[in-house]
Structure formats: C-alpha cells, structure tokens
Length: 59
Image 1: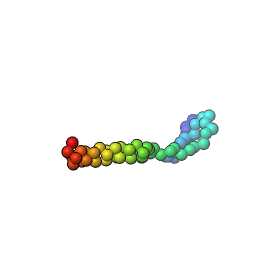
Image 2 (image 1 turned 135 degrees about the vertical axis):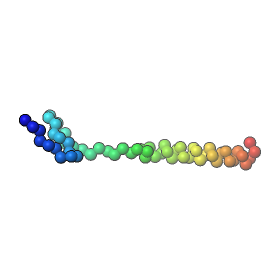
Image 3 (image 1 turned 135 degrees about the horizontal axis):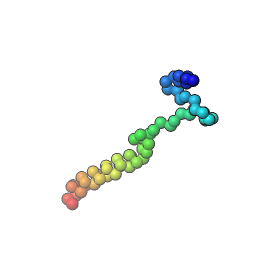
Image 4 (image 1 turned 120 degrees about the horizontal axis):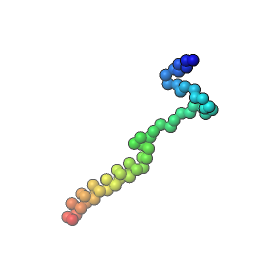
C-alpha cells in the first residue's frame, strides 16, 4: 500500500494526532530583549563619557 503524496509545506497526517495545526511564534533574535541591548548602549556611553570627563579634569 502506498502513502498519498503530501504537497510541499504541509504536514502529513500522523496516526493518533488530534491537535490542530498552529502557527509558531517567530524567534525574536537580537530584538528578543531590547532593554538588555539598551542597557549595554547606555553603560558604554557612560564609560566613554567618563573617560573624557577624567581627561578634561586631569585625573
């Protein structure tokens, strides 16, 4: 007995599966935690600004 062909992009039926197909949430990638990246930018800016303040004040 041959199995029927399934069109590309579709999931073949599975024995005993009663679940409906659902959309997967897209992976956020680098934007998954924007406050983390914002924190890195702010800390880096403060470090660079502190360097210039220290140079100007003579430390």
